[in-house]
Amino acid sequence: MYIRRSVSVLVVVVMLVMIYGCEYASDIFYPEPPIMEETDEQINIGLVLPQSGRLELSFGRHIENALELAKNEINTSQYAGARFNFIIEDSQSTVKGAGEAYNKLIDDGVSVILGPATSSAAKETFLIAGENKVVAISPTSAARGLSALSDYAFRIALTTEVLVPNGVEATLKQIDFDKVATLYDEADVFSSDADQALKETFNTLDIDVVATETFIGGETNFSDQLTRIQMSEPHAIFVSSLPPEKSGILREAAELGITVPIILRTLTEADVEAAGEAAEGAITYVGWGTAVDTPGNQAFIQNYTTTYEFAPNNYAARSYTALYVLAEAIRNAETKDADSIRDALVNISDYDTVMGKFSFDENGDAVYEPKVLIVKDGKLVLFE
Image 1 (cartoon, rainbow, N blue to C red):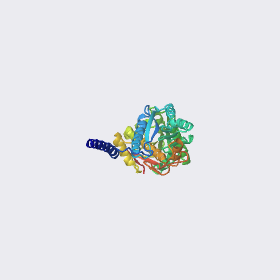
Image 2 (image 1 turned 60 degrees about the vertical axis):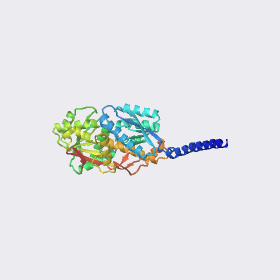
Image 3 (image 1 turned 180 degrees about the vertical axis):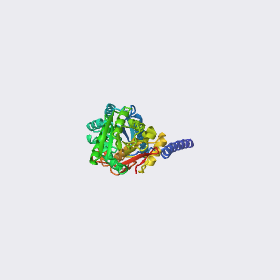
Image 4 (image 1 turned 135 degrees about the vertical axis):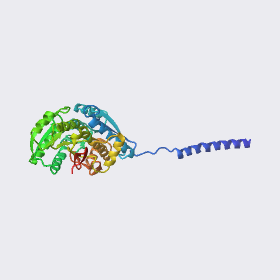
């Protein structure tokens, strides 16, 4: 009896030891996942992109690709202290579509929106952002005065008042011209603003504008305008346009036998490829280029090209920069609300990006070194 009772007690003890031993082993080999401060937090970021319409290929595809590339890098490195999640709305390449996309994202509770692509759309959406106290960052719009529409608006592209005077003066050092012609898209805010800024700059430099011609975005025949320009015998032609029309203008100018330099804002490698030999010698005023040696630029180009099997353009570089600038602001912000992020963006200064040392001015516009490029042997290289 005593022996049987002792054996029973022993069995119970052994079983208890085994149970508690298994729980202890579980604690050793399968510990509870550590609680991460902020790194598990998700921040929804709205994207307003032209995923359809005439700007889809030149703007939308590159912007979305670059933002996705930057998001993956930032989330993997936990750089911002939170994971980014994109909520994308299609602007349909129109001002109305961009406004509707902004309103939908705001209704869904998004407090940070990247986009839209164009100045015409930004003129509309920045007002919406200001009224709703939502942070708005346009990677690519560049007309003057738009960021001043809202305390919550910021831009990554160098604006017209920076690029145009700098570009004209840099070009004058290489090319002698004292009379010029201009051609611009009169239906587009960016193009109209750029043409006006050019004329203001020419006036200060005593350069005569001997002809001005216009078109409307979406047109494909520019021969009448270019013929009239050719008859005015300018020493250079300045074109202000969105991407879809640039290559066609260059090709038709070549077909007419125009040989004077043609200077365009933000000519991309894709524009050069589309224009072919007609792009040779074209000059462009930009904030970025594949030939530029800035921090991380070559790594960005390689990663983008490897990921998407084609090279990034200027709009991709600005968008990639936009998300990293936002991540830096969120990393430094006191909280993750729109006001704190806005305040942190205001304080961005000399931040290393693929564009170079990056800051915002008092209006929320980008500050970094502008570049002038020229097409040589089918490639955009520094104009030196």
